[in-house]
Image 1 (cartoon, rainbow, N blue to C red):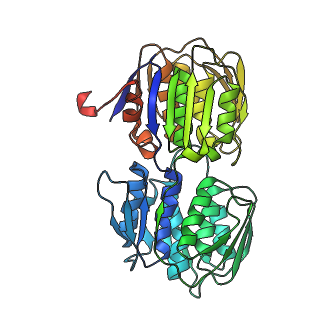
Image 2 (cartoon, helix red, strand yellow):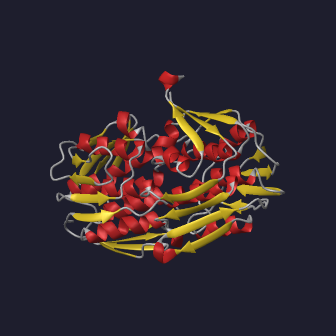
Image 3 (tube, rainbow, N blue to C red):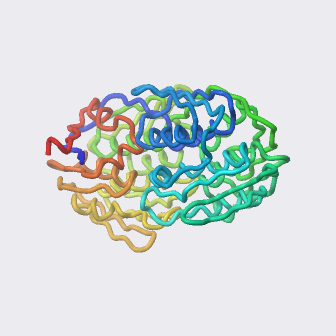
Length: 426
């Protein structure tokens, strides 16, 4: 099993180009199921997750042309050969479950395994199913699979989510594009990736308004057409690299950064004493820190436009080096502090109680062997290792490969002493 070998203490300097957003690309790929015409997506990140989904779509009969090393993916779901998404594939990634709604909307039936994914607490799909049920789908959960049918088609409905769910909002929005009548989604998620998906669906002929607000209206149409669409840049990747620079010191310009949707993260970094210069028109974000000490900043994770839960682990790594005490409250997922014990192995002083972590900054971290537990936790260990004295080895980095494209290459180009060590090399 591969691992990363990192010798810390090197400031980062240079430029990094931000890849396409994983969380957007996955749902855009699923959207190809809604039309028999070709969909071409550019700026698709080459990740384990996106490649897994491409394999699942191929299993369903989608013609997928995505050359190795390319960021352009061509999808043609003209005629599916199956409407059954098997456990062996769906278990690898939660986003795979979202193939259910589009297949029911277009074909009238589908059978999809209940999902797997990162072990960061229970993330049930009940909101997904309630939305489909409200649109007239008959549902049966049996043997670990969801069997759904709407033989006469889905119907528009009013769906009020009891709490904000990005996945359920995206799923219901896709299904509603082909429903008869109007669907209203209330207390909908406002994440930028939802707006990106809505933009693509509207290019395909959907009639969606309100994306980016808490109320979405989808007027169903009889059929959708193909389109070309560029995946938005990854705000979580941009935030991750920004925090790596803040932790190590140096001066890095992030190119193709989605500056307009990073406000909460930028505010937190500036409060911590980090210099952040943004240019939304040029899509650039310059992050710099000299030898001035970091200041402790407390945050609560919140749905967009609040501080993203997917940057919580990275910020904890940064705060472990800040002067003073910061309190990090996780309001989105339970059990998402599994990185704390591993950061402590590097010398961080973190006490976790329920959904709150108290981080008392230390003068320096020291390298040690650590183990990744999930996608975002794994990259928090990389950030800490880059700032630590000595050598750190991060194992189980297959988590990293799920969500970060060319991570070590991008960091090494800015001066990081980081390399991947394959299992064969020991």
